[in-house]
Image 1 (cartoon, helix red, strand yellow):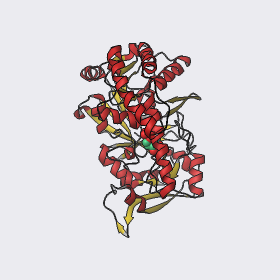
Image 2 (cartoon, protein in one colour; image 1 turned 30 degrees about the vertical axis):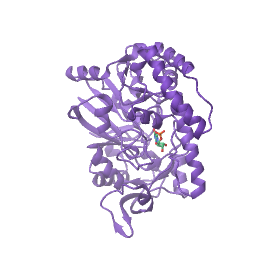
Image 3 (cartoon, rainbow, N blue to C red; image 1 turned 120 degrees about the horizontal axis):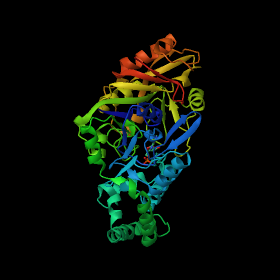
Image 4 (cartoon, rainbow, N blue to C red; image 1 turned 45 degrees about the vertical axis):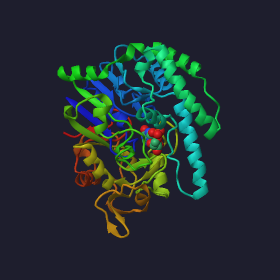
Length: 432
Ligand code: IMP
């Protein structure tokens, strides 16, 4: 049985906790896109773990974890994570598998990411229009650009030192011209980078394999497999708020290409939805609140990025965007997170539609400038004004909380089967 967990909003929905929870019954957890731009924070027995690349299933000793071909791997981040897990006494031997087809993030990808963002920000002040995407600066975009332009360096290239060095020299020749002529940055030394990456190769060698065949064999053997999307549907390069998106496909379709898995192998798609909305970086965010309510959501919800520490933009739940996400991903079940953040609000708003020039829209505008202009239509619901802490049964939730959930189900077209009321593993309601 293969299930998929996807972020249904702009990322940071609390997928780490839900994947961790569902990993208890899984044999394999596999990641299919993105890189160290993701940040999954987990609190288990009071201990905090932040994972960027390795699936959060790794915290369960019985689970095998796969990093698929669609992920872009930063050796520095990967080694740091392996070290952190070892320090916590978590054994990953024979439990971590990395696709030999996965692309590597090279030092120049990070430099180019930073240089392009800096150049775009400089333009922002010139013409009062946002050009910078507000990336995480982890080199994700430039790595996927190289992948698509067929200059990418893959894990498999590390096997042959000469071929690897030749490829690197050719790439760095081009990059150095860009760094010098356009961005005025220092030149890179290909041989030094080749040495560093070959050293990395010896460290990760035990984990490299053909993960496509590994997953195929696991499916044949009837294993329980959980696929973990990073970021969120609204940051998808095809279906999100382009160009203010990441460079991969976090939506469920990305799992097929990012793991070499047939779409028909996936039995169920669960969307992780935060009880309100957040977004980091630039780009349209129709329900964003620039007032005291937005501040309250940020401070109660501790809405600061796990990867960059940036304050997240906050707003009410956008059920119109959620409906789109449900359609694009094929979500049938929702895990609703951070409900407790709304405990003290007198009333809670939910966006049910967008209007443009006074007309109600049927679908989300594809163009970012138009999306910036939409008006949001809200419904207001009473808050429950009590703490959800310690509630373990759905029936014990206050009526106003149950009503809010029922409205989310009606508007999104998917059933809420999990409700999370704190970052802790224990504070979760599984609806029977
Ligand atoms: P990149 O993925 O670093 O290229 O960043 C592109 C956009 O995606 C920026 O707006 C980032 O803030 C956003 N982004 C990337 N990863 C995450 C994530 O894990 N959570 C939320 N936003 C993210």
